[in-house]
View 1 (cartoon, helix red, strand yellow):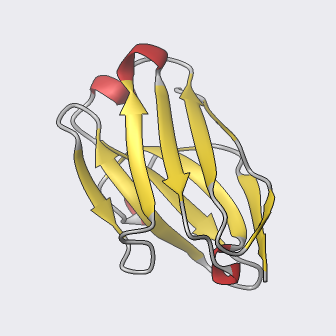
View 2 (cartoon, one colour; view 1 turned 180 degrees about the horizontal axis):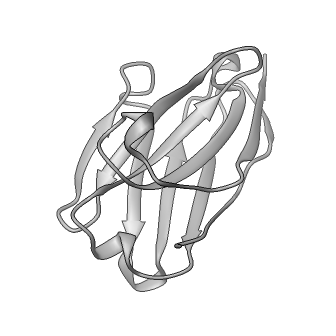
Length: 123
C-alpha cells in the first residue's frame, strides 16, 4: 500500500498563496496511468475534488471553483505531488487531502488517501 503524506497547510489571509505537497512512499503513482488528486473537506460539508493530474502525461483536471487560481503539478524524481494555491478565498478553508490511483475528480475511485492538511483562509 502506497502511503501519502501531505504538508504545507497553514493559515493565510484572503488573497494569499500556499503550496501543498504530497510525498508518496514509492514512485508507483507517479508513473502510473491513474490520476493523483487533491480533495478538500470544509467543516460540515462533504469531500470535494479540487484538482487531479495524470502523472505519466501531465494531463490535469480542475474543479470550476479553483480554475485559474490553483495549479497541480508533480515531481516524479521526488515522488511528490504539489498544489499551488493563489488568490485564496475564505471559502477555500478546508482540510486538503492527497489521493492516489483514481479517476479525475471522482472521489470514490481513489484507493489511497493521505491524512490531510489544514488550510485556513481569513478575510
